[in-house]
Length: 522
Ligand code: CA
Image 1 (spheres, rainbow, N blue to C red):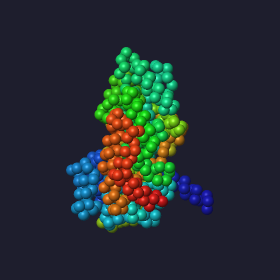
Image 2: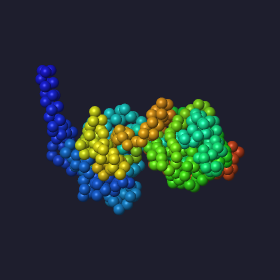
Image 3: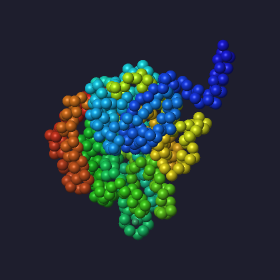
Image 4: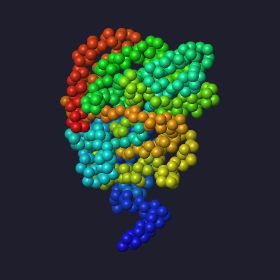
């Protein structure tokens, strides 16, 4: 018997190699072709089809049809707006929902309208019919908790990014070399380095024109807080709440460590170690300060920032801007606060009008199978990639094209905002060598901290949050900027600041967030 089954397997193997259609047979969900309608609205396309139009179907959709027997047809509402929230409001208002509702920023609406009956709860459907999605939840329970609505159900399958790091600390290694300096390993050495950049003319033009620390987003000035054991955010959203001591939610800008960190940042600003125009220079500052040979250090994305060594090789002699490890704080902590979020508020849900619930959830599960993941990440095998030594590898045509690989994938129907699990191998293939080396360097230390993945409020909690948070956030940021710019002294002002936060409802906000957090994450 054993010989026979081995022989059968060998025959199957041979058949698989020559007949893709047969190989895909085990992914078939329906024998009779089934058509489902879909709303798919996201920044890159306002519709499910190449360029957002229904007339040209994605190559990935065509392959998925062949594999599963299920086809999706476009029924996107709001194709004349690029605002996905607005499109969702139109869809909900018109009432006539397609079978699947997907795209950008669907978490909030499905968690609000799901419990009211507009969307189907997925808990039992997934547990019974979607073993690949269930396996993901079993190994990532915190991600499942983060998408769960206040009623304990979840209503969408999210887009799940892959990869650990987002931003990193970058320094002009050629400036260090010309001044005979080593990379700074702690905040004290970093300060000495920035002073040297300011005073010792590392760009060699005889002028004191260097900008030691700069950032494209002014909010990154607060990232310096992490160098003094404070926090600037708990997630990849600026100024967000954070998980304190592994157990409760607090706001970083109401902590004593923040007071001390801001005092240091204000001092650095006053001493010219931070770009004088940090709050106003804006998104072109990285381009400008690097290409003019003026900027020394920043905190920005691995991939895009590493690209400057190639771009400026001919313009700035010896230019070498590379990632270095986060300098240690006074307590000895090296922290990279920014990281990729493991789950997005994007993905897809099943509407209450859908009459094929089991088939639809099996279809959602298909995208979490090995074949489905390859298809959703890399496009169609043989067209945009090939399997080489067990690894999916993009074709030279894809890697060498003028358009970025992600932009090419969007037109294939890969990397679009369906509920899918990203595969970092997709991005690694077109990540510059300097960034790869930086990522490997960051992997030598335990730099990342736990992220606050958000909470789903009840109606009452939401009302408290909406009443107090927007004005408190405005007040916090107004004080934040004023202190850094030297208007007021954070240490002298601190007691009044905390009193004002309490008057503005800080305790009430913290209470509702923590009750939601405990309910959701246990
Ligand atoms: Ca100079």
